[in-house]
Length: 329
Length: 291
Image (cartoon, rainbow over all chains, first blue to last red; front, side, top):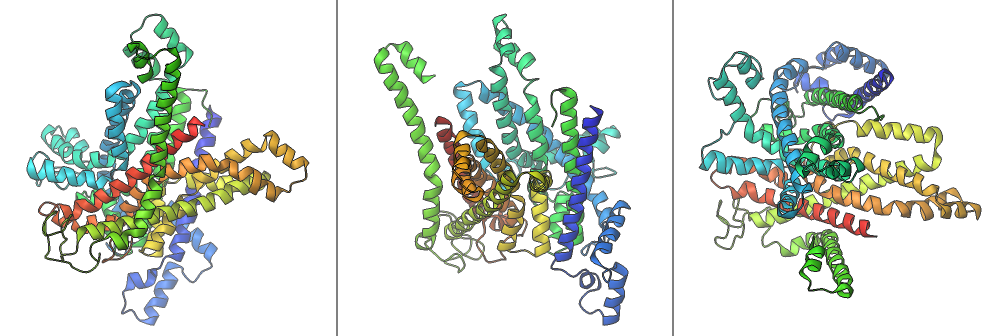
């Protein structure tokens, strides 16, 4: 077991190193010249030369890479062309809001996915309706869901707020609005944060929920055909008990793997949704960086999210093999 | 379900039951076949868009913000009076062909990598599959955004960016299928009768990977349409006046609460394309399962 965990973490580290190579190469072929971007168009020849030397751009490529790697290890992700601040500092500021939104979205995706899976495995009218719902869910871009929510729930019915992660005057220390307020015992503030998160989180969660539901359904179907389930039925348990106490436990594995994978696929959606709802997270930060070609910001986001995704999936694998020792990936 | 119903109602005797069963199966596979052919129909329509579209997608055709269904504008007009229907049609055409282009490039890279790895074996296989694993274990959309940001915005760059992250899964499938096929008797027979490795791969191995590839690729269309729309929404696609569905929704977000159609109609176009992709994928999978 220890060996498996070590191997899995080792391969995760390998992938992260490969990611830094990819990002470094992208930085080299990037169409914006870092010296120009930092100094502006009117810089003198001498200033350009001085800045190139300072950035180490006159050195051979391989030593530039090691210099870059050395910076990464010390938390240096470069300077954003747009905010003129260290990218690392920007990310620390924007990451919590995204983490909170992603967490709410993840809970929704898992809940909806479980619902889709359980209801569509039962057969009958409900299953047919849910098949159509899932097909539509898998075919609708998150922003269209957000639009519908804004038009109906915000504009017509005034149930949900339109932008931001808290009402004006909301009290919170970091970007974790819900967590901060809960820790401070401010239930009202936490509720306000949750209400702000509902619509964006749902818009992000729908497509992953369908994927999770599909995988969960097919793995449930497989489990329900197995011998031990037949035994459970034969001893007279109700179908509900069979599913709830015997089948679900052995069917969540693939759904869990799918959930880990969906986390990575969610990000393009997160950026779009954060842009729509002016949600102050890294998706919003990325969306602002794209039009001005702020490559250091984008490469910082890529590295942090990529590394986080790789580690989360390694942890999902390890958790799975701890839960079911037969699994060796 | 339907079959037991027929049987219980006693309308069908034993002999006609089997006829009923094959009829139900035939109906199912007819529906699957129809679904599987949808992409062909959409491709034809997409080719004909310049003929079908009532107005130019770029030049104003009437007053701004005409609501849908008024003065001959089926989907209304946008903020500068361009016909929304024509823009959505052209946008759908661009989205559709973009998705197909990415699938084609993904298949080209994936099939090459997978086939070379499976046939060569040894260190070549190990190296190629390690690279594939690295790409598989990175978050695709994030990497695609970084690639496009490095190359600069634009439709071609977006297609390259997404294409770079869209092949590893195909490579995996091709390698797996080929290794399974290579152990089959007809391959041994081909080998013994002196067919060379290249010809063996092209004539005897690759055709066998086709069913799995076709199903996976068609299931991917819907996913790709959504991914590309997301990137276009973020401003990574073609520049301003081009009718691109994601970008149209993004730019008309400002008008969402007053003139909803300008932002919603392009999104509906995406839903149609993604639905076609998903239906076709499910249909093809059913057809392959029946065989």
